[in-house]
Image 1 (cartoon, rainbow, N blue to C red):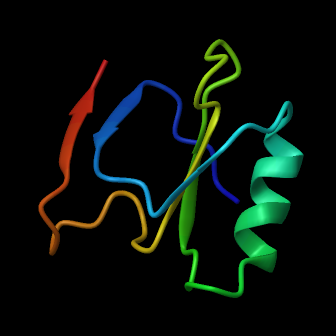
Image 2: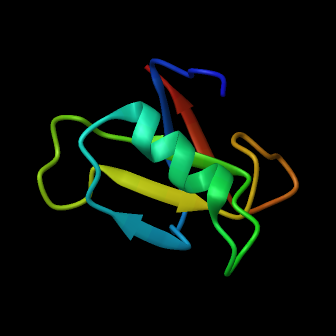
Length: 70
């Protein structure tokens, strides 16, 4: 996976998981079978939604994603 520090992606998650590491978040995306996971976000500071799985690559200008750079 590729890190995108400083970028804020506004998109809906296909699935939200409570996982405690970026490696577990990446593994869950790679092993998903109910949908094709193409990207994920990991928020270690969040307790309710630290891992969000997506069916689009981030950033993808052909979707309705709002990408901002900090």
